[in-house]
Image (cartoon, rainbow, N blue to C red; front, side):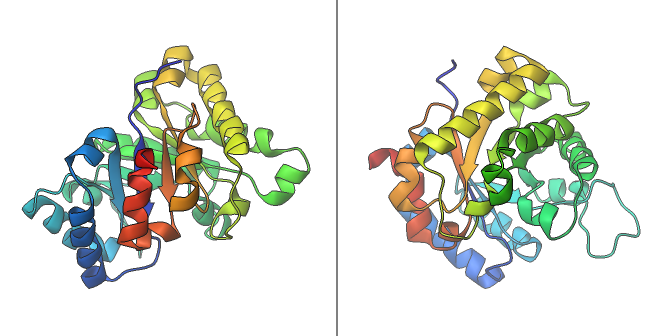
Length: 259
């Protein structure tokens, strides 16, 4: 198994923080993280759309080596889609990562596997990298259907995507029952499912691709559990929700290797 996958720690701010608060948290993070942190792992932040330009300006003017991300996009280039944002618009703001298929988008907004697959392709078309989210509900887990649910999401999400692109992307395993609930998969459970995700990628795109792709764990990741989760061999980073809204907590997760 490849051991040189650089971890990616991503902060998903969801519908929190106005652009003044966004500037403040980025500036605070810039004081708490140093060159050794960025050398050890990639760090991305995913603000609401209204904050992206402000965050971009601070990152670039202060030369902060955090990576700018987005939480969502439409798959069309342009059109009469009120309230949506195209991947081309994000590309112009130097966004590098786009979260695709988050469970909240699937469960609340009804995004289908077909929509998500179209978004993966659209994100790649605009020289950005998708973070494809997959995961099961507590009912699906208890009924023994967790793996079949995740396999289907991966197969459909990667349909028609070439091996090189698959290798360059990120898959985030987020058990729906652990998102924002305070419940967290045990390190063993998280490793088991992230290993399964890698096996699914191997089935689709081959062993080399599976060894190269980065797999994040998400679901109530906090400073107290980050180190144990991120020590697992198939977990290559974290997609962090609530803890990314506080600079101190997020910085401690980025520094997990020091715990």
